[in-house]
Image (cartoon, rainbow, N blue to C red; front, top):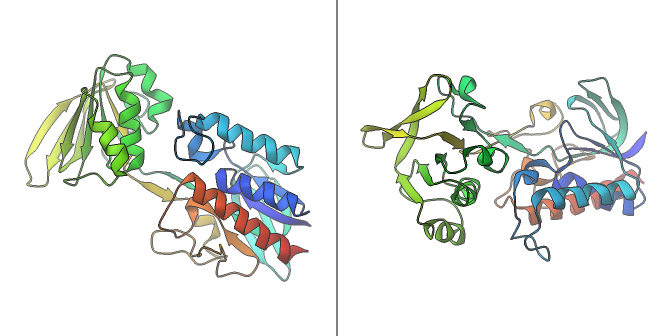
Length: 301
């Protein structure tokens, strides 16, 4: 039985692995996809102290290599079941059959992008609909694209696309963006951006690929917007359903935990975007990882 099992290899999970290993704990990290989490899709990070301009991929890779060098073990399998307790130990089972027994558990499962739920969305995904501007933006170089959303991710996506595309629309259901003011100012400084505020995307048009989207205003009026692509950035969904029998989740599905990362279950900690919190940034994810790892290591020794 190892000391600390970590579910998720984003910033929070990788930082937790680093701190737990430095505390002398045996560590296994479960990750269902690539190490790094959402940040690997960010072309340039400007808000992490001391590392201005680093790419998300480079940042994530450095974290992963650091955790590996310290002796953290990695299992690339998506966790499908967690059972047990602090008294008897926690059992983890992956979809491909990987197993692990651990004294303590750190949930760092992160979040995934929210879909629109529109007819044709699945069919058009990869044919004009994308949830990652930095992944797919280059396919639409010199073309007209639209971004749906009003938070930091949507505005960052739109800013990135202004350097690639001829025209960028950004569609938001409210009359002002929720993103940081500095990001909004940067977005509006680009001449090839046009905002469509008080609109939602209500329909998709096209045959083999997206050619236009239907927009519905808050007053009920509709209009059609011609576009070669639609980048969706309308929110995040915590991936915590597998833990619902172990820890308390809030109504949105986030693990209930404070700044101490302590959950409702002894021996289980939650770190990063997956837990209840006001600020979801790289720096707070890293802080959570450190806090959770130190607490888990103390408990497991």
